[in-house]
Length: 532
Image 1: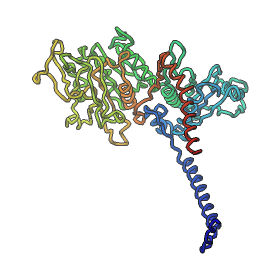
Image 2: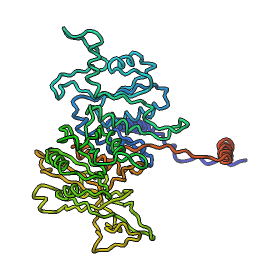
Image 3: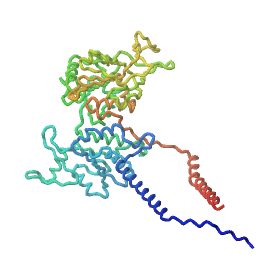
Image 4: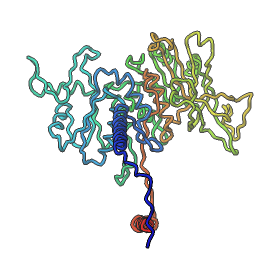
């Protein structure tokens, strides 16, 4: 007979269900509390992370500074933006997230509204009546108008979006009132077509996005209204280039993005620089200024809040202009910045943007290459005689080690001669501040100047992104927009990857056959292991 197991002397322990129940309830309560706390903190302290290598979905330094600047935040009224876009548009998602990022960084300074013209026909027609802009394709309307009195004392008024107006006694009761209002506020209204936000090739394929550049530019211009004016001495330079577009055309395009108009004038036809000039530009002058023109230049420079932008052509003989610059601490030398490597003479100067200058806040320490011919500048930064006159020269860009200023640049195999040539430091660009810039009471009255010993870098297809940022920062510094000094938006390029037919066939087999087969095999192995 089988043996009967001996009875156990120890009694079975009772299950403590109450304790386990309390433990489970506490864990559930803590879990719910943690989830609620995480959601609350994430909503109250919202943070986005751009995980792309080149930060393709992050606004540039320039755009962020503008959105946080007094220009927008103290505008007087929220800037209104209307995105009239079909939700079925293939670009809706990108534009939506981009404009949402603008509004998030600007806070209450921007009011954003998305309108689907197919679903919100009445709202679309209302915008057409208010702004006089007929909807023909997807677009963005930006309204920076403020209901206030303009500089001439004329009262202005705008029609708020989504509201009706009742004319007072004696005022027109027909569409004339709306038309007049549109005309008054048209300088502050910008319409951007969505098709202008990207570039296409011959096959109508999008190759690059320039949406941030265009939107930020239109935000600035909608606030300021009419473009600011920088006058160009057109009769002292060659307006045509031998190859491609001339430097002043490239500069005009860069300035237009900052709501600045580069307006040519002839010094021979005027007696004084116009009072509405934000600055005077001498871009690669090939002819020197005569005594009368120097008097005009000096009279303008002696004004408060005057500004000068000078890019030199080293091949031109500009004695009077060089004397003028020397009197303010910048001497344009009669040399060429070169170096010799592997028996080859190089003139495309590699430079470093200097540290400490306000213009270089976002560029300091970064390198660039100025293509073309360059002359060196002597910058007397610590000259006591200039400092006593409240004139402060500042170096902006300096050639790296190994370059020198060659005075006998016509020779085929130049060598550095310490008795004739110029050694380090070699400045390629410099600035001048005249006045008491450190005092808040007089900081807005100082005169400013930027001098660059090279004009070729502005020529067609030679302007590098960091140089465009340098020019934009210099202009904003000259006209008193110090808050907008920064690195500007970059185009987001789309790159195509060419796949050979053999590679395409392999990828097709990998996706349709090998990966599913590997998944099934792995499932069989797991099933067989558990079954055993």
